Image (cartoon, rainbow, N blue to C red; front, side, top):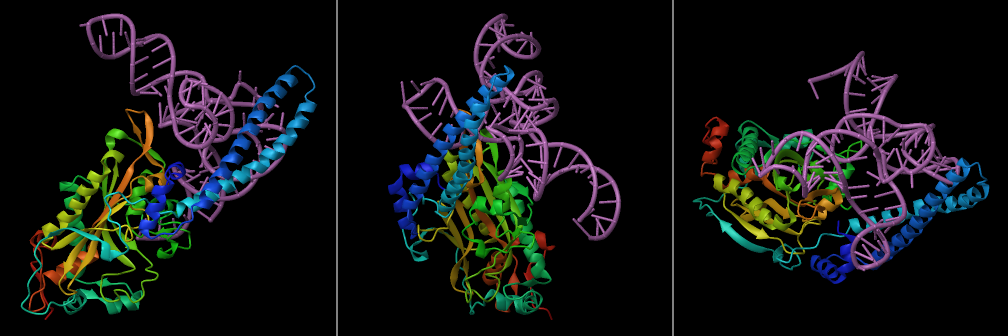
Length: 425
RNA sequence: GGAAGGGUGGCCGAGUGGUUGAAGGCGCCAGACUCGAAAUCUGGUAUAGUCGAAAGGCUAUCGUGGGUUCAAAUCCCACCCCUUCCGCCA
């Protein structure tokens, strides 16, 4: 959420940002709502002031056993108006916030202006694409043949977009989770957390999924929502809190399953592990000092890249253009891993700086020592990494002519030393 | 699910419907004392909105939302959360 004060003072910047994003928002009602809100608030304040003063005088008169009837009668009228104004102000505030809540974040100045993913800019490429003496297969075929991925039975159990992992497949997924958490906690300095997988609406509002993107979420009969990413529960750890400046940046990593309804993605990535209703992810979250958050974005992206490097998976980093960025983000790097079976780069991590957009919604602040003021922190997060898609990348990059798949060396200790997954006899 | 108790400032904790944004204490910050520190003393220590060039003023906030009243932390209702006990349960 943007600051209404900032908006009134920076109308041009906002209009440009919205245009760059390809979003259309009529700003006029916003200013009208704000003026209305202010007008009502001023009225309310002055009437309350009168009430406060007069009620003291009434108390004094009554103490002195003097007649206060006339004054009470007068104040009864004021009270009526005050009672009306209360709901009017609440309504004005709610309407203003409703309008504010659906305005996307302002892109950072370093973000390229563009329409869609075709305008994203490649920043760097790491690793060498593997060369095969045969036509590389796609992961779902490999996984089914190896008996480690069972899509048919998952469909029987749950429906489309679910996967049953078996044997070394299940173990590989678990190994990756442990490996990623170990790297982030032992080498990159993140605190491991294990948050709830169901959250309330307030948390989803804090990170920006609500109110605009409710259709993407699974909701329970108890009005909880299944988390679409660990970003939601982890970022909300400090909702409504004021952190100490010297604690920043706070760095946390969490493994969670993620649940997405994938409404509107019919026909997209229908095969395999790429797009699921439920998938595993290790997430990185940072609460940073606003003056240093862009350094933190770089290092967070590097932390995620490190996993791919250790696994020996080729990837590239792209910066998303204004038109392709998420609603809450000010700048996003996508890390795309190379998938030889698909002959394509596919997103395996998305690292964003939200600046104070989420922090304002969730009221996450810190006490700045120098100014003695409370300021909003900057929140950042990124996948470190999407686990299912990492399995995809390993299967496709490490496949061999006979259909077996080698295991990257760093993972072998997590798999009881297994070096290759082979077809069952 | 049933029963009981409880939610007040960074923390602890008082609070008979009427100068209570809220006693007292702890903590924190600044100053005095000291060669320095501790102890002691003095002062300051919330957030947001609004008016103002500023100093500062005004308003709101005692779990949340409503109600009663000229006036609510204080009375009434609903909800949320926490604790304990019972039931159920991994």
